[in-house]
Length: 323
Image (cartoon, rainbow, N blue to C red; front, side, top):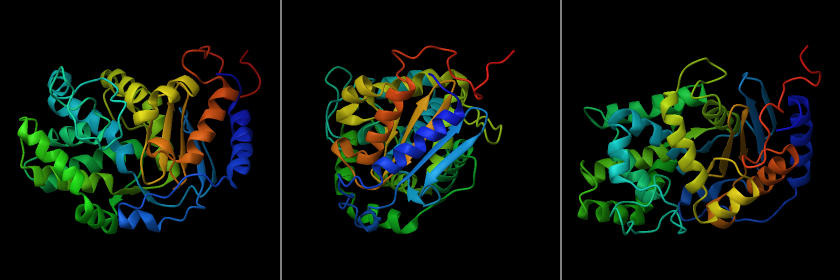
């Protein structure tokens, strides 16, 4: 990675101006409440591992995290039941299929990976707690450790998801049929719909990314969000599966662990350096924000962020080298 944080800020300003008039993509409409999002909202936020923040555009606008929460739930499941149990029930291979596909991996007879809906529902089933309220509290607390601020569930989006989530119910029943859910499916789905409806803003999502970049330590609060031992698991799956059917192209073009959500949020992790998030509701291929994909592709290219080409030690906070 080349350049200082000042260089990054200047480039982000340039990219925000460049893509502010970009009109490709369509706001998600199959969840009615999401269809109300303003397609002109556009924010970019960067948080480095020293906790410095740069934001431009609609970075205080709240939106629901949707499946961008999956890496956090993956980490929580790893802590609650351990890597062996998670990997026994969920595969690690890219599916090449849409996020809501109803299928199991041929070899393992489980969801193909933790990032697609089937895998995320299975992860949700692993969250421990004596009752549904306690399990939701576990999830909210985890997201808050990453984001660094108190968060809540958008009840209008939650109700809309619950009312229209027929395909996710089909996925859950499919998992039950193969013995992959250990709790009542409606209970699991209720938590799943609630966690997808957690509301946050672009800078909070960038802080999630920066926490993952900082070995699980939130750089803005100093709170450990996830044990460092699990970072390899989380980031590897994000890199290979986090962008659904465009993951291969993303790995080729951008080369960073990332996760999208149909609420318009997208975050990428630059390990040891920073987290970047983009919020823009119109979605393109793979259900990812169309502006966000453009921004992160150009940011990666111009800052040499691609993990297969980046040179360790090139990034420094200030323009002047240390004595």
